[in-house]
Image (cartoon, rainbow, N blue to C red; front, side, top):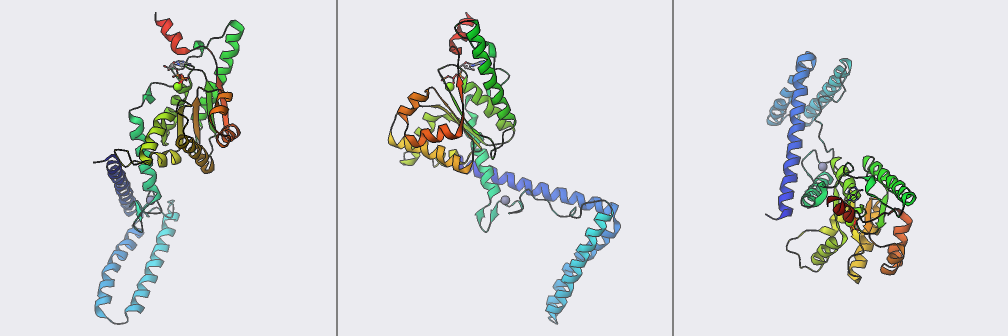
Length: 329
Ligand SMILES: Nc1ncnc2c1ncn2[C@@H]1O[C@H](COP(=O)(O)OP(=O)(O)OP(=O)(O)O)[C@@H](O)[C@H]1O
Ligand SMILES: [Mg+2]
Ligand SMILES: [Zn+2]
């Protein structure tokens, strides 16, 4: 089974499960009301008999329309009465209605033969989970972030750098805690190697995933490679990586700038950044390039969007990979 088929079958199973849960809960409500409000139980058993009446009316062939209308009216009156009784007894008036998770497709996953939005969302979320499964996402967290690893040239400089990084850390933590795909901003992390850009991006990814949002994290280079293969029909499966990047709740593009400068990559990067800005979906980009280097590598359309709509954080200090290695000795 391809990944896509597997995920579709998982998503359909989940939707079926939702539907069953909704029905089971509805059964419980009926049992509860049968016990607590006998008048409603009586009305409901009358309504059940209505179903049989309809068959009898159709068979008889006499004044069918008139009789059916009468039944409809009686049914409506009964529903009205049930609502009133529910409210009088302290229940919400729709207590006996089935509560589907999706009001559009009633937890069937389809509307007029097309996939419902809820099914598409589920597929996107499950795809994101699959893609993230193998990444190092679990290793880096806010808890394992250590501010004392940041160093400057002297005590004053160290203090200054730690203050800056402490602020960045707090902003990122707040960002993760308050994450909302419709409201959260875009973040650009830049700075030299080994300063915790990937570490903090993954810490954010972890928190946001825990909240149940779809997060995609990988290096820009990996994504661009995949998209290129899929675009030119050289991929081994029929994934739609670009489509997923354009619609994920949160996209983290790590290490932008390590890819070759070729037109297909530049236009893809532009497409991703621009489309997500237009959709109002948040993106986090990290890069080793400073502003000058970025200006050289990317065209104005990318640069102007990045600088105008991304909150940027400069990572400072000395390479923490080296510092950690030294400390081990
Ligand atoms: N503040 C920190 N506290 C604890 N560990 C850290 C911190 N910053 C970085 N590290 C660790 O140091 C290593 C390098 O950090 P990271 O990969 O985040 O750097 P980076 O800025 O992404 O570097 P590059 O530009 O090379 O990708 C990782 O193992 C990371 O977990
Ligand atoms: Mg990194
Ligand atoms: Zn639906």
